[in-house]
Image (cartoon, rainbow, N blue to C red; front, side, top):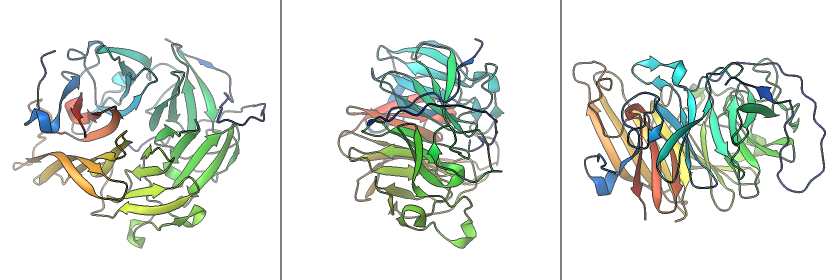
Length: 381
């Protein structure tokens, strides 16, 4: 899933306006595009129920009849609808590109497709997703940050030239800034867009049509050189994290890197390690913390995959994390592939299966159970 490495050259012109809030303007013209019985886990009260989804596919409709295809990222809309990025990518089976879509689960339990990512002019998967207060969808895609306007089937560029690894990371006006495989996105409490620029190993901010770097910038991470370093600003290093969450003080929390660690970045760029490393992983979020979310109760919630490969245990968990770094498992499943076969392809497994994206609304946690092709939920304290 960490594969957004396409590059796209786009010449853009922007008129910069001096404003005091975190407003964003398009830096390129619009791209016109073509167009309640529930099944439980082992213990419903402990590990949740199905919120939406049935079998693998791509079908709109009522939540429990709708079909998803490898849901990955989740985001909450202004009306508490849940937006879902359907990656069309099963860990064991592979890709089904025609099912790459952004879906929405309304508060009344209806699933609709809000944007089809397979349409002409919007090729490839996205690296992250966030919803603005007006309902517009922001995505990281092809080394740029793009905006899908609410109720419109068009896309505009809000930051990034589209250049890739051939150019150095560059801050400045949003039309001239550069990114490399940007991942997670989230709006902070001021309305600024925080960007995990995974390929550049940098936490970036889009504010007033300018991009600045909060921390990091070490493009290349070598796992053999040891763990990434804590520090301030450019002195801190990262291991290509992907997911992020923001608390009520605008602190940023990062997961999904090459080590099973969780990092904290203050608004001023001070980086510390909140949860130390337990192991190094391969690729594609097989051995690492994945999605992370901040809840109204002042705690963080984070998913973890520990998939050891054929002939070894597969372990998946949902965890509660205090801001002081105390990690407590809330739900977990373990599977063992004794005969070294593809054990997650027969549709018979309905526990935690590569949980990825996670969000909270009030006292309820929702997570994308990616390889079960469902969105699940449970109550949190």
